Length: 188
Ligand SMILES: [Zn+2]
Picture (tube, protein in one colour):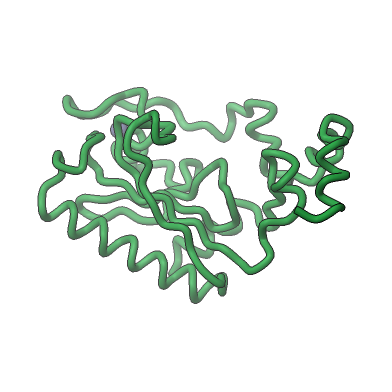
């Protein structure tokens, strides 16, 4: 940690407000709980969970833009993470509500890996990152926010993207709006 980081860490509380103002405008919809951007809850299949946002995305075929869905295949759905760790943060999930790897069929496993491969290449082309973090949090103790429905994170990384803002606060600067990125990825 550099001396500059140390200084900021010591003033953590006084910097919080300043950091919040760096957050891009699209986040206002989340902060103000803007209902106009939230699609209604839809009915899901008998093996799905109506409270699971991935199941909702699988069964609601009418609101891909609002739900930030960029692609569907027979067994998978790919969604832009609404609360991204970095610009271009995608979630690749099976359509089935399943929290265990051994609950997936061989076809589903193959399709998931193919989608992860596909999106890594597309993000490389479209966003020119220097690397990726790709992974799965299996179980709540491992950090899964939604342990009942498997989902792989694809997070593009750029050299130097771990700046002091990340170090001193939980908020990052996301330079591109989610809607603008959705428009790009849904048409590739
Ligand atoms: Zn689910």
